Amino acid sequence: MEFMLLWMDNLDDALCALRHLAPRIAGFVFAIALFVATGFALVASTQITLAAIVVIASATLIESSRRRRLQANSPTNR
Image (cartoon, rainbow, N blue to C red; front, top):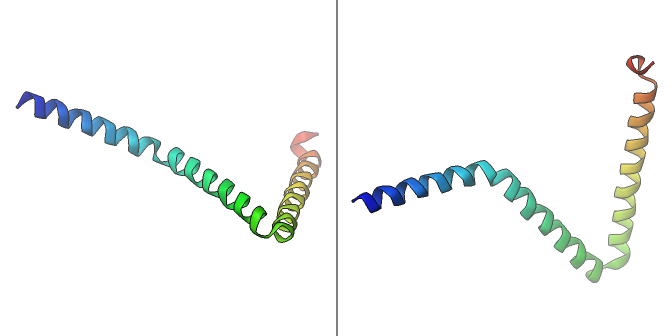
C-alpha cells in the first residue's frame, strides 16, 4: 500500500512539472516543426520558399528599424 502511495505521489509531481514545462516543450516542438517544414519547402520548391524567406526577413528588418526610430524620437528618451 505504501508503495502505491509513493508511486501516486511521484506521478502527481511529474504531472505538475509537465504542466509547468508544457509551454516550453510545445514551443520547442513548434520550432523544430517549422525548421523541418522550411527544409522540406527548400527542397520541394526552392524559389518560392526563398522568396517567402526574403519577404519575411525584410518585413522583420523594416519593423525593427521602425521601432528603433520611434524609440529614438520618443519624449522619454530625450
